[in-house]
Image 1 (cartoon, helix red, strand yellow):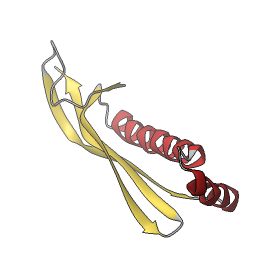
Image 2: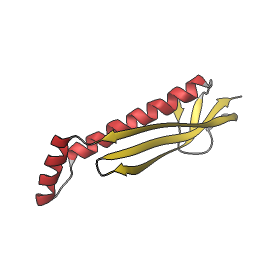
Image 3: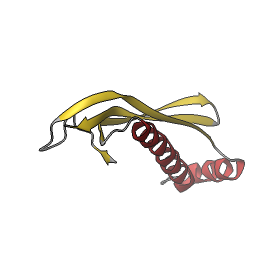
Length: 103
């Protein structure tokens, strides 16, 4: 599946099918949360959270692609990501874009 964050596919005529999205709500685990608290004492990247968000984005992207595949799409354009805090220990990640078919 071709994923682009522009609103066209170079050198292709396209037909829009539908908005597609994938979401995941991810929770921090206690061990990572504790280590993140320790890291704030010295500063720097909190790799546990970076890895957690990377994994969550991958899951959300796969769900978006699966939805586009079910619609028979060839690509997803204008791909965007969003995040929001669901509660103090969980975040929602959403991937969304427009599923298109090549003419």
